Amino acid sequence: MAEASTLIEQAVAEEHAPELYTLGAVATPLNGLGALDDAAVARYRADGFLAVANALSPEEVEAARAGLTALTLGANPDFKGVLFEAAARERLSDLSGPERELAVRKLFSFVNFDARLGRLANGHALQAAASKLMGGAEPKLFQDMALVKPPKIGREKPWHQDCAYFNFAQGTPVVGIWIALDEATIENGCMFVLPGAHRDGPRIHWKRRDWQLCDREMLCVPATAVPLPPGGALFFDGLLPHGTPVNKSGKRRRALQYHYAPAGAVQDAKEERLKLFGSEGKDVTC
Ligand SMILES: O=C(O)CCC(=O)C(=O)O
Image 1 (tube, protein in one colour):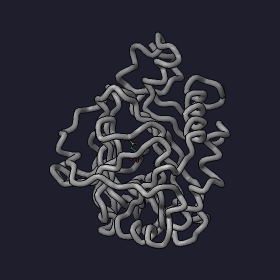
Image 2 (cartoon, rainbow, N blue to C red; image 1 turned 135 degrees about the vertical axis):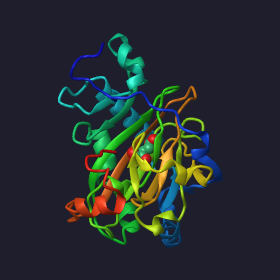
Image 3 (cartoon, rainbow, N blue to C red; image 1 turned 135 degrees about the horizontal axis):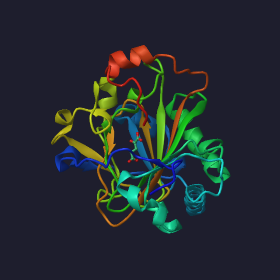
């Protein structure tokens, strides 16, 4: 058994219908953050997302991976934000370092505990890009996570809009930056998005496998897959419906996810959020 202080996802992941991630198209990424010109910003406004290969250098990818490994294996004893997969509960205490890493579901709130991960979250060209996408506002980080889909047991993140989890007033531009640290493929659980659907605004969410859109709404709907090489980034609007399927493949899929809102924006609109996204979402976390 694991130590009492170890965080483990409560329930083993439920199966999902493969038709929830119906391939309609595959996104073509821009090459490098320098390619984020006015035309790219216009595309972001229209589609609600922008995929960029080579947003991070290979050295930055390596440093970020090393940061996650260090935090997972306890290099900083003050850091408590590692959540393990429920499927690994019984064997956790017997796992060696590398095996333990392959049992992680996510890490959260780590930017102040590892300088390598902190550097990517603030003062990097990624934030200049986020600022452009916010119409020039200064982006302030309000959430940081690493989503880790281990081989074979990596769970689905059902379809949702990120703003369903946040209490910003409607109209606050929220930009997510999702960064692949391994090659993210359709097989190991890359992002799927619904291009342009952010413009339809908030949708009702339900507490089912997660805080999510109704499966019936998403079954057999052609979606766009966003496979990315390591160091590739997906910028996406807080209202863009997105999700990731299970990872049944033999390859892990690590990703960082940083969320930004304009500096000064506050999360004080919980009642509005519950009205627009659904009253079941009182206490939900990404
Ligand atoms: O990386 C993933 O699997 C899903 C991430 C995501 O959509 C989220 O945490 O909101």
